Length: 177
Picture 1 (spheres, rainbow, N blue to C red):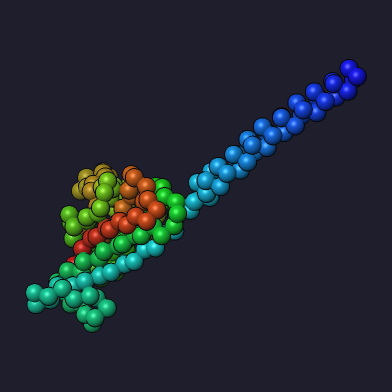
Picture 2 (cartoon, one colour):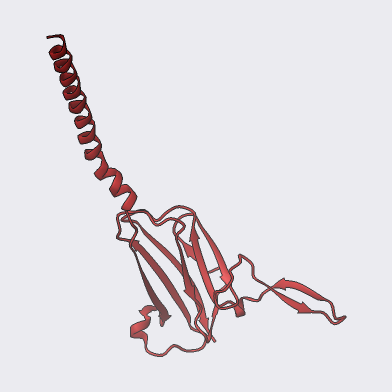
């Protein structure tokens, strides 16, 4: 009799333990979806580049402007939209400075907290103030600020993540040589 009571008590304890564990497992499973989604959320950033030129007091899209002429200023806008379900961290975008154009100094603008850097070597390196080596008349070499005329790219790097559903704009101007 005592053995049966011990077996019944053991079986009851096991059933209670399984019920509690099963409930915990069900609770954990219910939250697992949210946790898994947070872990697998991915950004999906779509980038669009649009250019305009001002002519005769009108702003014309470059795809409708035909040929551009020396002295004209082209305004490039890079729009980045995150259509994914996760944030794009350490997001950056690079704008090209087309051959035959010069970056207009001070024309870089962007949404949010952004760091703007420039390249003079085709995008291999970027710096807030690129430098070149210049040889003096006495033969000494010193580093000096690179002229804007040799910039090849402009890079925007945001300190905050591009949130899911978020949008950022960055723009810069170039003058046709």
